[in-house]
Length: 420
Image (cartoon, rainbow, N blue to C red):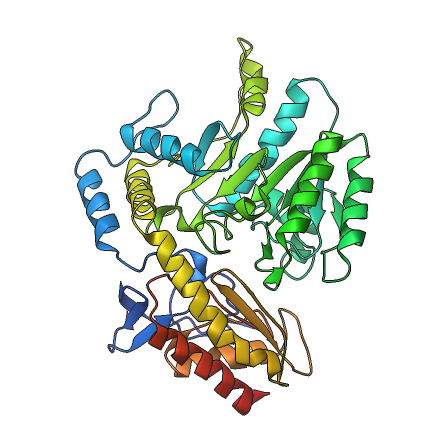
């Protein structure tokens, strides 16, 4: 099939043969996006989970403008700058105890790639042949080769299978089957080649907004610790208040060996990511032998403008942002509650500010035929909702009002009336 060329832009996760017209957005403010014809759209998924305090937050915008006039880019190998140093220092104060070093990168996928390389580099440099990564069923960690390898195998990465490395997989801890997951993890950790276990704490995002309790997360960390397996927390999505606390690991009192943060790190304004690790991982690379260097970088590592945005974002977290998280979580619980008794929906769930429902349909999963129909319906209602197949989830910026949320949930109910 040959495409009728309308634009040279190839959009992510978009089948252009079925979705040829893109919605042109010209500005954003708070919880809203505005189109070229001045339609106001409620951003109900925080623009792919990145926007926390709202679009174009004045404090973050000012920080970007001021930094751009002073220093906009510098090679980070052999150099440093105040925004990066300040962001790193503040992150270590906020992150779970025991994390000592901060490595900058530029996206969630790259922060996970860095984590995997840190883990394997650690074992290599201390002379222990541990190379196997343990993962969880239905997980998603990104779209680079390493992150696809540790994510669920399926439609997302089938074409790239020859590039992917083998992993050990454990089942998702569905309600009532948590022990099977823990037993599987314990068995995998006993393999003498087990290097690290990587997990999305409390919520598996792209895998379907699957949720599990802090008690399971805590036990998974204990099992890894008992076997000396490194514990990697991928908080790219779950960080920055999404689960109700600043980081999901807090709820389980878990201190990961390596943690990945991105998305809301700059409040959703600019791409930036960090990978935090324990001192012993850094120390395994610290040597007079240059061959033990941690060989990873990107040209824009710790970009000063992005770091200035992150610094401004961290300042907002010190001045009331947590109160907004609690408020949005409470509103979400009130509005999702009626769906638990609605026979058109199942698996109604909430963790922190994230809610999800599965619309009963003839097919399920990411490629369910109902998915594009739901997305089109919400677009007609001027809502940015992007269902994962028959799973409809809501993850708004924390500035969303009660009226905004009521409009979102009313539309979800109406969508079931029209499409189910």
